Amino acid sequence: MVKCKRNNELDKAAEDIDKLPGHARKMFKAVKSLNRKKSENPKIFDADEKFITNVVEIQTVIGKHFKDKFRDDQINDLEPFQGDARDLNNPTTTNEVEKALARLNNNRACGEDGIPGELIKYCANTLA
Image (cartoon, rainbow, N blue to C red):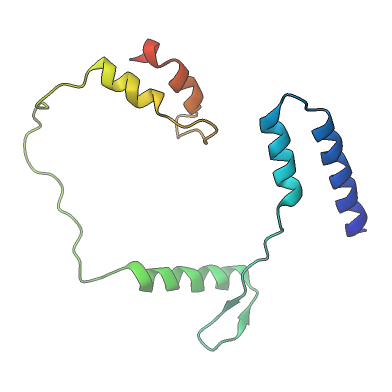
């Protein structure tokens, strides 16, 4: 059943590729999906080297691992900035903003504002 389903997926992807002359990006995306290997979930063991299957326990073990690895209780948190705000030495120019917006990468996830990077990138001269 699984093999039949996979074959159907492959057939559909092959048909999609055949329909896409001149659309290289879509073609390569389809080929990439055909070649991707299914990732296997990592096997997680507790301190006693017992295999863990419970999702909550897995989260706890992984969280503890990274907390132990990267958290240093000896380091104090940074103090909040104290002082008056002051102007920049050189104000930001519209040219600098346009250049920065033009360097945004395409096909990236939207930020918290939900605005696609491409929209900002290609409207840079209007926004700046």
